[in-house]
Amino acid sequence: MSDDYGDSDWEGQPMSEEGGADYSSGGEDYAYSEDEAEAASPLAKGAKKAFVVLDKEELRGRLGVAVEQVVDLLCISDAEATRALRFYKWDLSKLQEEWFTDPDGVRGKVGLLDEQPSTSRKEETCKICFETFPDCWRGYIHTSISSGPSCLDLRCPDPECKAAVPRRVINAVVDQSHRARYEEFAVNSFVDDQRQIVWCPAPDCQNAVLSLSDQLGVAQDIFCRCGNAFCFNCKEEAHRPVDCETVRKWMIKNSAESENLNWILANTKPCPKCTRPIEKNQGCMHMTCSQCRHEFCWLCHGPWAEHGERTGGFYNCNRFKKAVEKGEIDEQEQKRQHARQSLERYMHYWQRWAENDSSRKKALQQVDRFKNEQQEVLSERTATPTSQLKFIVVHCRRILKWTYATAFYTFEEPAGASKEAKERMAQHQEFFEFNQGQAEHYLEKLHHKVEKDLAKFLRHSKTAAEEEAGGSGAAAGDGAGSSAAGAGSSKEHATWNAFREQLIGLTDVTRSHFEKLVNEFEKGLDEALKVYDVAIDEAGTSVAAAEAAAAQAAAAEAAAAKGKAPAASSRRITRSSKRRQGGVADVEQMVLEEEAGFWQCRHCTYANEDMGGPKCDMCGQPRGDAGCR
Image 1 (cartoon, rainbow, N blue to C red):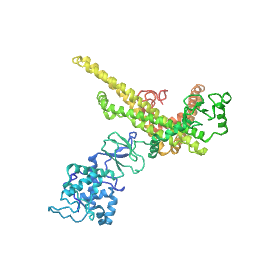
Image 2: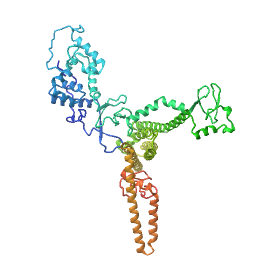
Image 3: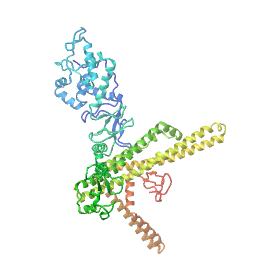
Image 4: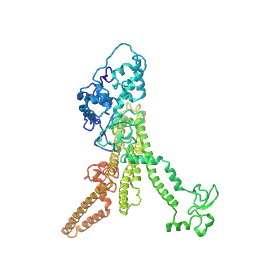
């Protein structure tokens, strides 16, 4: 039997204009256009292209490119090339190697026969199901298609025949609904059988994503056209810079019953008599079991009759304190204290993870509402393209959320750790939390500006538009009124432009901090600390050299001026001393500015790219002023 497309819907599919495919990496890296590729992250400007989002039509085009290359290489039909590629999971390198080594063996495995099957219009009865043709084939193929994607490798029903069912036979006997289902399976197999292409997991999204990364086993954030952000490797929500295993453990921990057991262990104690768990909900240590009415001390579990003022009163227990001091706490109490500490630590990170997740969802709702209701209006009122009205709050919230999850596991002190290891972990944690705090600080400022200040501007624009519409009739023949309206419009544009520049500057600052946070964690905190310390030393040396030169110049001026310059010299030295007293903070600020490539005005938050500029380009505040840095 020979597989031939015949009148298949695949005939006439336009080939991609992107040219031939590159199969050098195992036949999975099909041709793509750099113009189509998406950036790795909304944070990255000019980043290396990381993936391509494809809809169904684009998938068909790429499938056609792959088939066409096999047809040209192996000199077989389109249908045979499609079946062979599908059999080898679209790995052209493996297909090519085995084909030229043993072509007959490949034909046998795939189900391709050299001879054309004999055809006859004579009505015959099937020896398997005892029905006449074509009803026999129709029932067989319909059942196979209804069973799922396995119909793509449909073979002759005769057990002694291993030939694949020709495509022309399928097209000739099936109805339209089954043919459409078969076509859907054919396109889906192009994605399902390849590691380098995955479906977007968002509900109702039909897009697929082709990864251009050469490391498919690691986390990669994907941002689909539908707005969904997910990890290419584990299909969970995007979670850079956290690895997939940490995400898996965190999600299990959040939903596991073990946390409930930890809470019970940390916050309750069993009654010494009936062992029923009891929660202490008031301050007194005198406990009475509601089940057996046994009275006991919450701290030492001793009978309450043996307690009183001599043992510390009702809110303390000297017996327990002595036991703690002597290290005589029983194993159960040690487990309880450890569970309480572990639970408190987990709740610290979980609350911040959950709060940022909630803020991210609210920001996402605001983005959707802004796009649906306000973006076009704002664009029209301010003559600003809609492409400029995009913000990164949602993505930064997602990053910040996952930094708390990874910090929970990264800075968990291992049992039996040496003093040096504990000190190194403390340094890592302090460095990480400093950068995390900086990023969170600017994100909060950006979020407030987007959520509050932008809303105020929108309300003002709407009011101005309504007033302008209401007064348009009265001012129709009044030149002065028209001039006043124009002046008001110009003022509104100027106000929006100033606000937009501030927003862009703050967005750049926030983006820079989050890029730094992500990159430092991904390359390792040890390496990041080394780079940071070297930069601090170099910057400190530069500052010291500049101060020494200034002091020498001041001394020379003092000697030449004979008494007039000492005051100036003294003032310079005093300023130099103050700079030295600024110490590490000033030097660290210089390093941060050099790394970011701009200095930020504290007065208006604008990001100034001219590193040598004496004043802010936006608000005009001097760089050395208390309002700028």
